[in-house]
Length: 419
Length: 100
Image 1: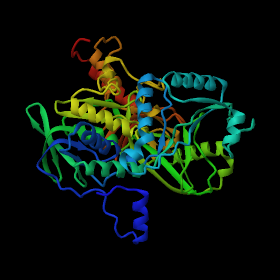
Image 2: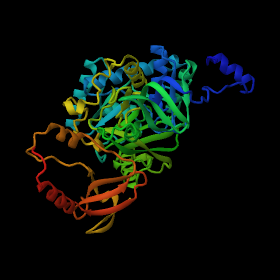
Image 3: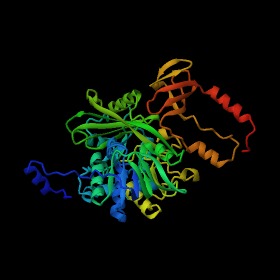
């Protein structure tokens, strides 16, 4: 497979673009592998890539129920940030951020990572105090954070209602300049191409319907395209974790699947140069390179696997958008959609060996899994290859809930629809 | 999504507050059984399909409702007052089973 470069672009442009090749093989399942990764989304593909790249385990299959990247990696709002309060989350997501900064070179695939900054708006002095605390905690861990005055925000974000007569007047904000966005599909395709080049089989339209067992041990998967034996089976299926794990006999997990909606507007001239979040509700927005406003808000708030939501959230998200940017009142909505999120009981993920011998689990990403993709793949691959967690994911165990060592960044308790 | 409140009739989703999975059984408040409390607080069945759950008609009559809803389609198949369910459960609990 050829490397991508400015030269290859030019050569293909001059030869009518007839020489591009598919970037991964359409593999058929073989009877046995060292490792089978269930789920061909961002995390599954990244895991397969790092298994091959970092640990030399190339006898790997990624099995995907639908088409590659057809789940949440293609449905998220593309924000990448590491502005967390608790050290476990800070270290994990900051490592991910550093991996993002070199990812296009690592993969030889342009993931269009754009460090345009992420600005959290504060609307009360108490909220600004809390942001100062979080910003200080971030800087203590070596992460960039900058507390901004409302005057500075008004200069940097045109169109934002920073007046004292706004519905919720803005009093300041917390900016992480190294945060930003990435092209979500390119992340899936880049990891798929990288894994494929190292010998990983990516098997699409192959649903796992059961698990093979040898005694107590999980020893492979039963799929719609036949049985596949494996020494190790790794599950990274986000919102469908509960249903897949039930097929392995694990009936209860600290996870609820809920629906999160997202929206994109018609294309506008570039005016919004950061990712911006509202502090008096749940709303976030960025402008894509094509000009569309990509935005979203809170969960619908009930269990759902439907991949579509209901109208009250559409109304709420729109109202929040207009509270910040009254000038967008006549912008037309282009598309809206829903994704199934795996809401954990403390808002933090799970990357762990088990819960059965031979099985490895990666889930609980709530609606923040996209930014974690590189570190999640790195840590999960380490966990699978070494049978012990990487130091970065050691706190993110499945039994932390029962042991009382939850990692609850928002302090919401076991209320998945509030994380 | 419309929920048909037994008292108020069919009402918009925006009037209701979600109270979560209705399959969990809260241990006796005096119980020291840590596994039972952990299971109650953290563990979920999380089915794709029929789900038994609680809602409150917080923007209406404020009644707590026990609802069965399909999580794949959002279709609601039954709505009842939660207090009736609670009554049945407490009758079950009054039977001698095992010590806390």
